[in-house]
Length: 224
Image 1 (spheres, helix red, strand yellow):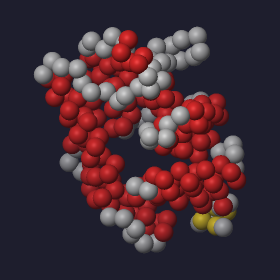
Image 2 (cartoon, rainbow, N blue to C red):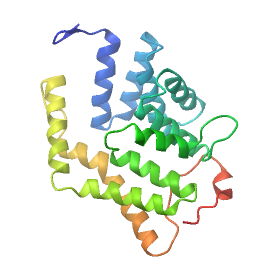
Image 3 (cartoon, helix red, strand yellow):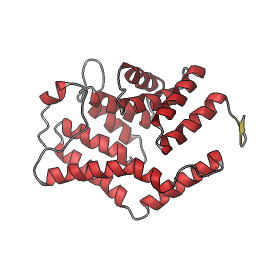
Image 4 (cartoon, rainbow, N blue to C red):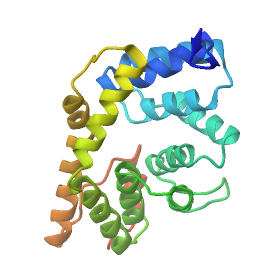
């Protein structure tokens, strides 16, 4: 298969299509495609990262997602999206601070952001939850406020909807899903979460953070 001047393997094609399945909200289809990619190319680190993160943020999270993300990090330790995935895994595991096993969520998310030209809204939301769990309430507030500001930029929605439209037409030649639907699916829940956290802080209350995997969360001092 060829795409422009580049020869594509079947694994390449399925990996690209998996991204589109993610945009359309078919996460089950996306995971099946990524699993197929890894059956053809077991060492494809970004497929490991994407599948691991998808599983991590779903009800199917478990040892498989952990192994995939950790293997992706072993292959691409300098990639900020992979570092963010590992940081979020460590947060969900309750490993906020560094320990004898390695870097914790707080160190990792700071590393991920330092490697980005401009961290996106989801990474900032991750940083906020991790910072708050680490006892850095002011950093958490700053991260959530910046994420909400980015979502409020006047042309944020129109720019991304245009990008989603272009991506679909370039990949499939047809518009499969309304770009507005894609935007709402990707950012609607995030905006609501950010607003709830910031309102809680304004009221002097503890914000609702993403859940960890076990009761270790109850032992962490999250006083801002």
